[in-house]
Figure 1: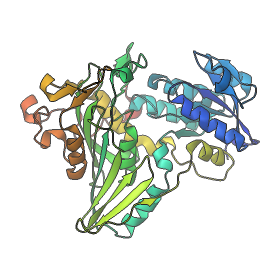
Figure 2: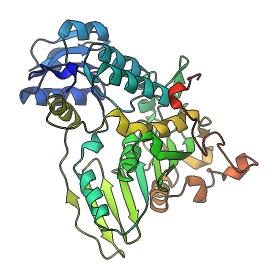
Figure 3: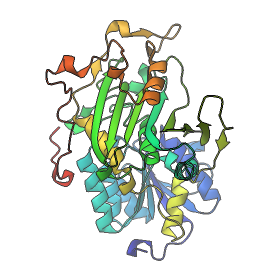
Figure 4: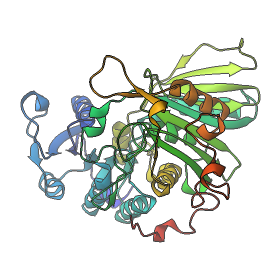
Length: 416
């Protein structure tokens, strides 16, 4: 137990930074845990304060747009940070300097250098950081690992991930940083695989047993956009690991119909499919006729796990070290050429909708096929994803991303 956890008593005083948008889910979860006697909301850091019914049941809550001052005045023990991506590192470090533990929303940082600065700073301060990949709290993950270890699907041949969601123009206008790769000289990297469907990437890496930064040897990226944005809305990545594994994750925000995202572990004698938002698992052995009934699992809430960890009762489920591989993917996306704008004949406007939603033709099936075959879009014959050799005579579309990563990411200077 570190010096910053000695003497902590329930309920732990909590400050929430970012209470609107996705932050409302954290607000409701804090309300649930406050009723259970585990935490007490003592502060909200927002540019637009919460009012009326939003704070019913919480008691006295101090509000301010000055995060550091709020931590000081409330004597917070824990901070939940759900703010724009470029602010994550500085806010987490501000908390660490005050001995305050953090639940940090994903992605933890917009670059690997910022991620290391945050993680190293928290370690030096002796504070705990839990990264908000809620899917990694699913009890299905250890269950799938046991199935694989027991040989349920034979030898693992790869892991695929698929996400097809529907988002309209309003989604990319919800905040100044939405749909951006950079803003004001700072990295944002708000791509489909690094933010809205980041859980697909992190969960696939977890099921492949490749969560540490050093587990990743290569990341291939194919980034596209149908909407008039700076970042990517239709992309895929393939990760090669030190153990010889392959992980391919494909995703889009331009689907015809939203579906539950999933990760599939491929084996020589079957496959295991995990719909991670539902904590639902299905095992398919051998041919298509041998399909087991779906199994539903529970889930450990990450803020609750952080509280239990600070009480010395549980290991932290998602410390920064377990998201190093994910951050290698974020770094590859950050360093990749800007996303390619899809040609006008590759997408269509959704009929009967005035919000400017764009649908990439055939993308729903293409994403599923990529997860099934572990192939990139360019390898599946789609016309708008040209083979690498057409872009680069050397046959390497992104020569800066293949082979070994830079020797020491700790010393990388972010010049974007």
